Image: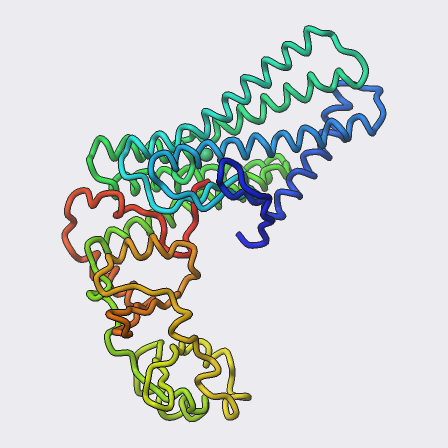
Length: 399
Ligand SMILES: [Zn+2]
């Protein structure tokens, strides 16, 4: 989710909007001003319809924000760090660092979002009844329709999010229930993710039927949403399984102790011809003139350079100085490290420092190998919250 515009902070939580939201808001204002409002209250100037349409679209985005803010505030009260809230094409996302430590906390964080939406729906409905009783005329009659419409979309938002399938809020409530019942967070995540996959494909199937049988293009929306839900549900399961496999492991258990070394002054073509084929690592440590470790080179940057410029480029030009890498210690627990690095790009390399010296590197392939091996171990029951943390860099967050 790049291209996010920062709006500022609410209750200390950074809030941003993705540019796709502007499209959604515009589409909503357009459909209200062009079709819905003139149908309900005919005979007004176009400017009145547009003012009401834009106002309702902004209020809708505000109620979406209230839903996410409710998640974020309750998450923070339950000891989770909140990175921020982003509104985008398919709604909002409250980015939480780490994971609820108990089923109760998971349920509280999940339920409060739909509760916020349903509360707004109730308030908007009451407002529409109150305004309707005033028997307003002219442009003011639009306020009744606007309040009814806000009530309806917030009702839909609240109810839709209660559908029991991850990553929807209802899926998290289902997870909390299974977690409390079976006493095991991973089993619960798998169940919620299975439900989410079914919900996602079901929704996409309905969308396909809508388009194919009735020629209704609104079905495209269900297809996109269903596809997103199924994908996110699968990613949550994969991540929970990966973190479960890594539970209890320390950085020293999985890191690359002795990455291959090359002089930083070597040209890239000499390296590619003579040194690179001899090692089985994706990552090299480059040494300075005195033999000291200066930087870290990933083979992907050599590949990206291409052969054309390989003769005049030196390895040091492509490498990342050690001091610019994220840092860990040999004793840090791997799940804790991944939680700390949440948001770092996929494929991040981490420098392992002990008493001021580089003692190894934690590489992406170290993690994949440890995950594969960890999956072979018999599981101990309830690895705790860390076992289901959805914080591996690059994986999605809470909608
Ligand atoms: Zn929600």
